[in-house]
Length: 263
Ligand SMILES: Cc1ncc(C[n+]2csc(CCOP(=O)(O)OP(=O)(O)O)c2C)c(N)n1
Picture 1 (cartoon, rainbow, N blue to C red):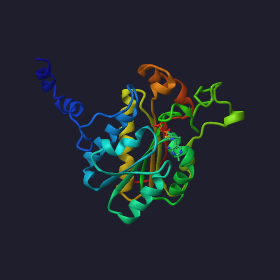
Picture 2: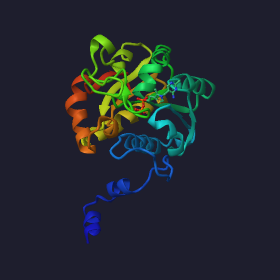
Picture 3: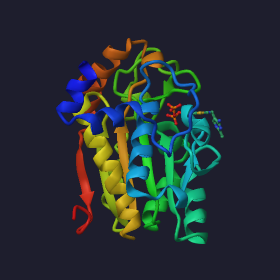
Picture 4: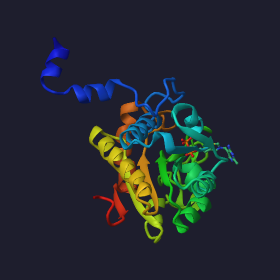
């Protein structure tokens, strides 16, 4: 009866979207912890790739970090980069195969710490690649150490008394920095802490792929993401942590959107 009512209300398309797997995702269980945002972000990327009809020509570059096995989860051509080197690998792939759509998927340790130089110069060169930057304010995979994005006062396994600017500096706002560069077509920050934010994240991912399809330049979507395990919070409390603690430090918004991209 209930499903008939849903059909009658014309909600079937949305129902199907929730219960069917995008073609761009494989039918395998992931290794992610309960409440982690990585799996949901994978799904958003896969939905966008399906909707844009680009699966056959898309190549993903997996990072070192919790998403190290992303190549097992996406049903696309993919490869694995050394820690922080995904933008360099994506540069090579895109230059050799310009007809391909190439994206990197990177955590904040991978992208902003060991890979800080790589991401900066890929953006300086205006590489025609799409970067999905998952900021969970810690090194998740290795046990919750301090990342360049950790918050002031945040207790991590390598800052047991809380991040102290005098010792470890301040949280880095990568996306705002990259937005200043002429080769960057899209630089936006979104979050996974509430359903409305998840929808906005998907739209931003779509825009980033669109920027590459239109040949407008380098695109980055930073996504504030939860890490309940290393934050020592429940899944719900982790979402509140993003909203209450991370968003004030990493404001959501569009820092650069190239002309013609919203069309
Ligand atoms: C060259 C090198 N240095 C350090 C490491 C250890 N290491 C593995 S993952 C990682 C950080 C991962 O954190 P992040 O990129 O934020 O991703 P998350 O796991 O939080 O998703 C580090 C330091 C490594 N594998 N290789």
